[in-house]
Image (cartoon, rainbow, N blue to C red; front, top):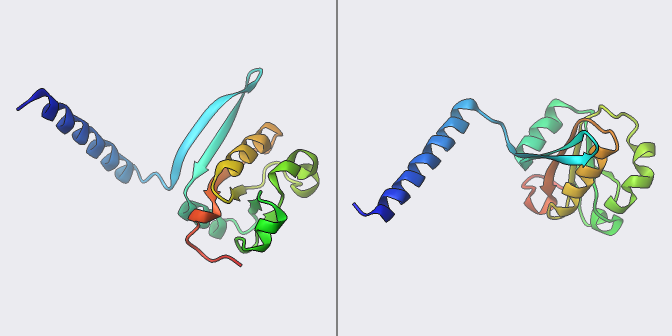
Length: 145
């Protein structure tokens, strides 16, 4: 067997092992957990989850805030039921008057996932402790209103 085929088979075997371990350990919908310095000694944790896991969290935690960080015009074209609109460009000035509890579960989404990522980072840096980014409404396979 050539070295090229050995390398390919080795890579495939490693991927199978990782996928099997994930299934066995039952890691529910967390796509990634990126950490990076936010300044000083603090670390900002961006927790990206899947749409299906976000939906599970919504069912388990009816008091969770589903935060839509798109524009008002985008929100009016369709949004996740129960969502609160707080456009990403208004978070810095309005978050503390809309999001009153720094410990409440906040599930953030936008159109495609870019704004939700930066909004999640900003919220965490502002002191909100339980913030999850589940990407964009474009990949939300459930009901919208």
